[in-house]
Image (cartoon, rainbow, N blue to C red; front, side, top):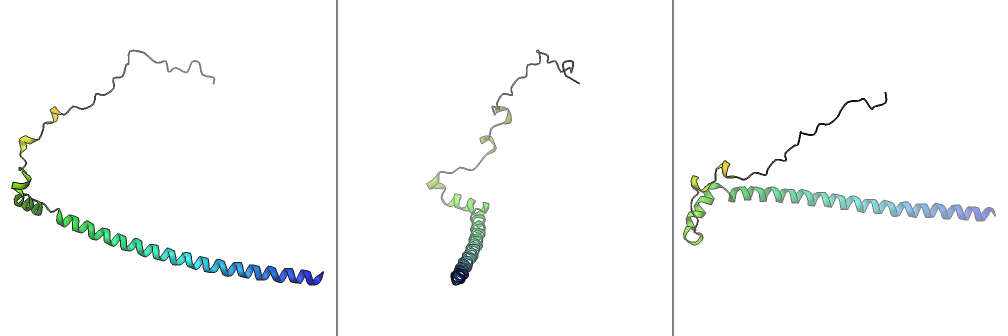
Length: 114
């Protein structure tokens, strides 16, 4: 009986050692994966910053004006004039809901229990 107890204890120690070994390598793999994801996120942020800078460079007003002048015949663009815009009084705003105040509301505390 004693040898069976020693055998079970040894098997438990070997099993827990194998489990700890497996968990250690699984944790290391996840840490490596996390580091790789952080590097990818950093690279994506750098690319995004570069793309934003390029977008700002390409959308400069003087550059767009030059492009519009170069492609005037093909695009048929016209310069903006003040009379092309509407006035504020021409805008139809949604109607505000009307509140009916002809029906009074009783707010006295006569019916409340003290």
